[in-house]
Length: 343
View 1: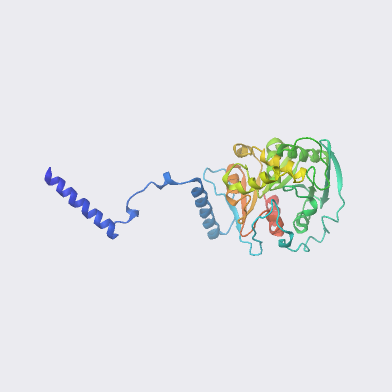
View 2 (view 1 turned 90 degrees about the vertical axis):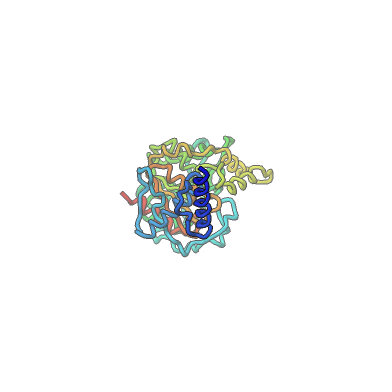
C-alpha cells in the first residue's frame, strides 16, 4: 500500500509539472462552462453567431418557429448613419438630423399637408394622411408630434401605402381630458381613430413609446393589426437595459416645473407593466428595427422581443441611435417596404 501511495504521488507531481510547463492544455480537461453563463453572455453569443452567419451567406434568414431560431434576419452596415448619445428623452438635437430635402416626388412635406380631426374617446385627435393603398398607421414616440417626423421617411412609405400620422392625446393638434394617461389608453385612442376612419385593420408602426402602444394594441385588438413594425422597442422599463430611459422618465414625472402633459406621459410609461410574458401571444408577422448605438432601448432588448414573438425578424443598423428612422430614414423605410411586400 505504501508503494502504491509513492507511485501515486510521483504521478501527481509529474502531472502538475507538465501542466505548469504548458504540456497539459486547459482544453484537454473538460470544463462545464454552461453553469457560469449569464443571460448577457448568452445574448452576446447569440448576436455573434448570427453576425457570423449573415456575413458568410449575405442573405436574410427568417425567425421561424424552430426551437433554436436565429434572431437577426438582416444586418445592415449603415456608413451614413448618425451615431449619437441619446442625450434627450426621445429625439436628438435637430442639428444632427440628415437633410430632409430628398422626399418623394409625390409628397411635398408633412407640415404642408392639411391637418384633419376625428372625435375619439372624448377627445379630438389631429391626423394627416399621405399616399394611397393599404393603410399604414404610425404611432409616435414620447411627446413627439407629426410636425417632428421625417419627410423622407414618410414620403417614401407614402409612395406605396396610405400613411396615417397622428398626434397622441395632449400633444400637437390633439386635445386631452382628465382621464388618467396609460399605455393602454393610448392604444384605445389608436383603435378609436381607426374606427373613426373606417379602417377595420391596418399595418401598425410604433416607435419607442409608440412601440409599447403598438404591442398593447396588438395584444388587445389583434383583429385590428395586419403586420406589426416596432422601432426602438422595449418590453419593459423594469429591466437593467432600460435603466437610463427609466431614470429620465422618473426625472420628468417628479419635476413639478415640467409640462403637465409630459408628466402625465412619463407617469403612464412608468406605470406600464410591460409585455414580456405576453409576447408569445402576438401572432402577427413582426419586424423589429434597432440601431447599434441605442442607449435608451439597446439592441439586446429587441433581440429578446424577436425571440419571444413567434413570427418576428430583426433588422439591426450599425452606428444608428434612437430612434433610427430620424437618422437613416430612407434605409428604415426600405426595410419596412420590403417587409410589407414579402409573402
